[in-house]
Every structure is written in C-alpha cells, then in structure tokens.
Amino acid sequence: MISDELQHKLFKTISEHPQINQRELSKILGISLGKANYCLKALIEKGWVKAQNFKNNKNKLSYAYLLTPSGIEQKASVTIRYLKRKMEEYDQLKAAVKELKKEVATEEIA
Image (cartoon, rainbow, N blue to C red; front, side, top):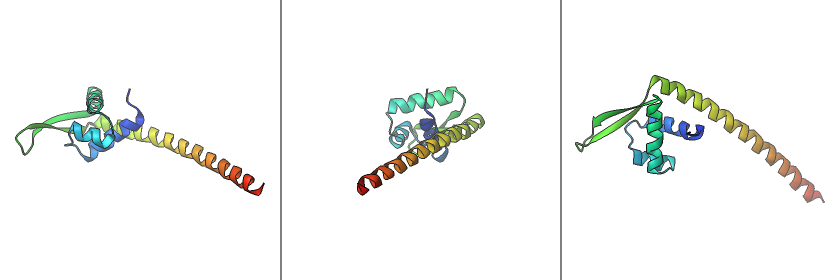
C-alpha cells in the first residue's frame, strides 16, 4: 500500500515531469530506486498511470509517464484526503503550541 502522501507526490511529479526517469523520481521523492519502481508499477497496474515508449535524443528507448483519466480522478481524491489530514495535523499542532505558550507564560509569572 502506498501512502496518500507518497501517492500525492508521485502524481504531482509525474504530472509536472512526464518524461522523468525512475532514478530522478526516486531522488525528488527521497525514496530508493526500487521503491520508485514498485510505486510506478503499482500505479500502472491500477490503471492510473500509463507508461508510453519514446526515443530520446541519445537514441535510447525511454518512457513518458502519463496520468490516465482515472489517474487524474485518483490524484484529486488523494489530494483532498492528504490536505484534510494535513489540516487536522496543523490544527493539533496549533493547539499544542497554544498550550505550550500558556505553560511558558505561567512559569515566567511564577
């Protein structure tokens, strides 16, 4: 299972750089090359990403990774879930900071 955070980053990176190779993708996402390969294969198997062959300038066969229509829908869904989770984390962090500020203010008075 690929986390919403990683899926979001994968979809975003593929959308912005369709001709990215797996090595570059792994560096951008901060994951191993093997994990990048695993994730791309999983997205392709689910029908969310399509790998299209093309020849690059060095006459080597390469791939362009394209989001399919269902991949675009999944990207939107993942983005909403990821945003919702991050907003909840932000609210919790904001509450914790507020409590810590109270604690510091109380200790400074004493």
